Amino acid sequence: AIAGAAISWLKDNLGAIDTAQESEQLLRAIDDTEGVFFVPAFAGLFAPRWRSDARGCIVGITQGTTKAHIVRALFEAIAFQLNEIVAAMRKDMQIDSVPLLKVDGGMTKNSTFMQLNANLVQTTVEKPKNVEVTAMGAAFAAGLGVGFWDSLDELNNLNDHDTRWTPGVTQDFVEAKIRGWNDAVEKSLNWV
Image (cartoon, rainbow, N blue to C red; front, top):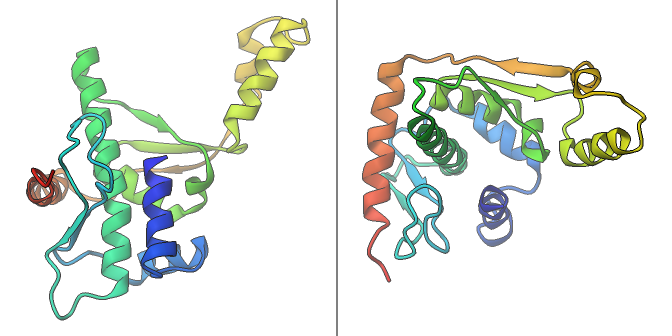
C-alpha cells in the first residue's frame, strides 16, 4: 500500500509519470540516481522503523538532476524499505539470508524494478506466472475445503514461476547505497 501511494504521488501530485510503462522507461534511462535519495515518508515511516515524526524528502539533488533521477530514487526507496523488512525478518528468525523472495502484484510487471529489488536485497526475486496470488490462494483454499484437491502437495505443482532476477551488483555497492539511504532517512526525521 505504501509503495502504491508513493507511485500515485509521483503520478498524480508531481506529474512525473503518466503510466507504469513510462516509469519503467525512466528507470531504464539511467543506471544510477547520482546521489539522489527519495524518502517517501508522506505519513511517517512504517515497518521496521515506526517513526511517525518522519516526513518525505528528496535529498542530493543538483542542477543536473532529472525526472529520471527522482523516479529511480523513489523506486530505489521502495527496494530499500523492502531490504529493511527482510533484514528485520532475518534478525527475528536468526538466519543469515533469505535465498528466494517470491513477489506478486502489479509492480511485478516492472522488470527493472524487480531487478532493483534483487540487487538491493541481495537475493533472488521470483515472480509467479499468475501474479494475482491472493485470488489464487482463495481458490486453492476453497478447492481444498470442498475436496477438489486432496493435499497441499498437489497445489505446489500449480504455482510455477515466470521470471527470476538475481543480484547483479556487489555487496560493497549495496552497502554504499544503504549508507546513503540511511543518511537520507535521518534527514526525514523529527519534523512533527
